[in-house]
Length: 322
Image 1: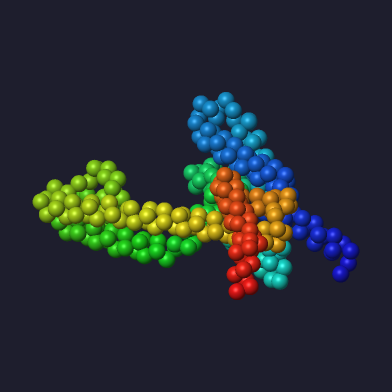
Image 2 (image 1 turned 180 degrees about the vertical axis):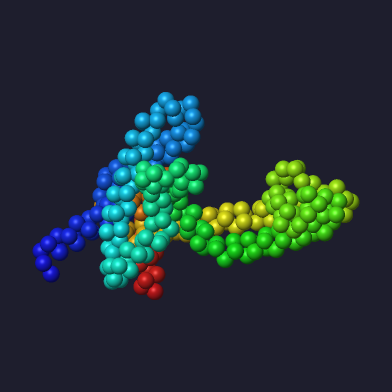
């Protein structure tokens, strides 16, 4: 392997670690805060530019900011694409890069800059391009542990949520067919077909109830009452699953953090300054509150001290002798 190849790979490793927040703590803070600020400011500017009175006054500022943000996101995308093989060095380089390109976050990264360059090349601005530009808000998921927690909850509860969504879909179809059966003759404009009746079914099941389409027949009203009652329970079902998933995930993360504290204390006897830095890094990655993390550390330290005292006490010695 040539010296140039070794140098190129070492640079790629450093870039990969920098982009994935694996470097020094100060470096991670500067990188994450800058990216969060750039994403939020560019998104706010994009929203404000849709107001004609504001856009006419600050058009140059908005264009400059968008050009800078899109160019920066393009550079970040290219660097992530180039350094992506470091995520799994055992896989072929092309396979790693294709995996990044077609991943969810890879598509988000692409959408964060592509609309601007399409507009610059002569495309007319449409609502679809504006929506694509706002996809850059999803880049914030990389820089907040809360989004990681949400992703873990959705992954763990995917099967339960799928069951709940399937049940909601069945009830939704049943509600659409039922209200069509009772109302289509009286209100052909609103319930002339099952697809038309689906609008009423979705706003009723979600308990939004816009009131623009309502049943007028006796049987239709009775049916609507039953569907409304069912809708209250159905809407709360996914919320309950996600809430319980959050509770379980937080418990698992606290237990994992507690296990790490116990392991470090048993290895070194006490927590060193380096141990505390490592635990602080783990705390942020796990999304734990600093006060809760400190409470866990104190509890583990007290438990380990009491455990040692019992081992060294005369009672403990006599029990060993027996």
